[in-house]
Length: 406
Image (tube, rainbow, N blue to C red; front, side):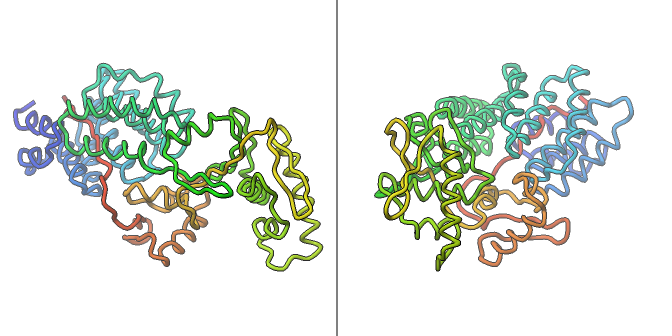
């Protein structure tokens, strides 16, 4: 391996893409193409980066399977950062198997980490945790360890394990300082904001206040009966009743939760559950039916009693009742939450992440764009969507540092 290639690889590993390009910008051999691709990715020109990496993969000979696999891993990370969730996961799995068979443990671990990050992004936490358990970060370079700890923290945050998340972010911060990559340190700092920023609201009859992640964790462990409007469930401790597929029942449960310890008038329940402005006898009959269904669903946790004016929620054991609401409630809030990461998404990737149809997501994006809440660029299949820029840190690329072909 010549000295320019070695110097360029070291510059990339240190987070200096300009320094790497200064050494290989005019070269078209396979190692130089691969390094140029990684450098362009770190500079944000993802389309050019993908083209260079594909040229590099074709340029490596049949005996250079490891080098080609490293190019696939780099392209997979570009796909992840650009939210191309339809990128073939099997190609990354095959590349990881090649790297493991050839003894390249560092890049094999990085490929595994990319697989886990994709699973985390689309909400498959159980599978992400299983794969993460098989990954030992000890032999990895500092930048890779920081990336893995960010994944550990991401899973812990979604599982409401604040202590675990805080410890993982502390380890990520130490690894980022050791790596001496400013963009990586910035991403760790950005992820740490999730521990101090409001993530939900506590709503009760005379109370509406924001909650941090640790406060949500404490609330769920307190034994209170929680009507969770973030996940559309009613829970107390480890006992959970899901109403995610029964929106009318959940609307009634939330209204009763917000009215506790008093009752909620029938007119209010009709308006919340059925949006009925002028209720007639058919609406009132339907309300009695739906209250009966809700009473049956919540029987392990609470009872629902009829009063002169309406209905009241009566939790078993005299527990407190609270409603846990999203920090921001607006049409298509889940879609906005994904776009809030600052990355550009295709509508097909959003559909995968939300487990919704592409047409449903497209209609929602068009409505949000008309309201000025999202913006798009590109046309046709190249069209991408993102939230309007806000102050903060962008997600960085953590591309493989070891040189392809080395």
